[in-house]
Figure (spheres, rainbow, N blue to C red):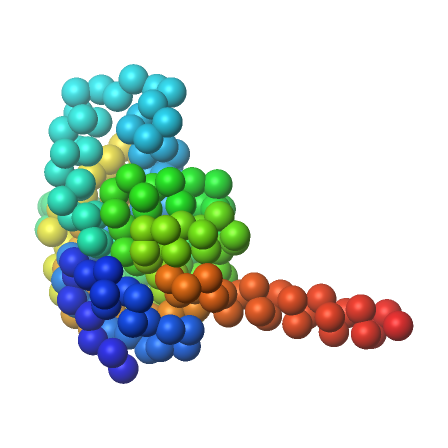
Length: 205
């Protein structure tokens, strides 16, 4: 297993190849549909007017995402009443929903790693080459196991989006992932899809 510390350098990203097992250590953010659309419309395409609170959050997350990692995750969180937050479960959610936005978000914030499950499409693959960055596949169905690598929930932003959709800032140690889209235009998901289509054509004769 390769060990990487967040923030991650361009050189470290370009050294990664498909199938590499990686243990991530450092601070990362969670973000799903609500977070990505908020980023896009308020700060990237600027079709909406951000509030003063939005601007404050934006300034706080920029340094965390520069060379950083965003995790497609809707966690189960304990301690909501006391504010002493802990991740009970932290499994990945399906990434393809963020395909319309991910490349732009990566470029804007200089995000080096996207974690999720199921892979992403051609726009994100191109984004991985341009930034550069990689897509890390987290182990689906291992939500409790993954939560054990979350050492601390440092804070949360946009809790008004709801617990699963909020931006949780977490400190992780040896967070287990596998590279399935690299910075050189290679995608394990694309390869599997192409092989599946070829097999289907063969089956149908």
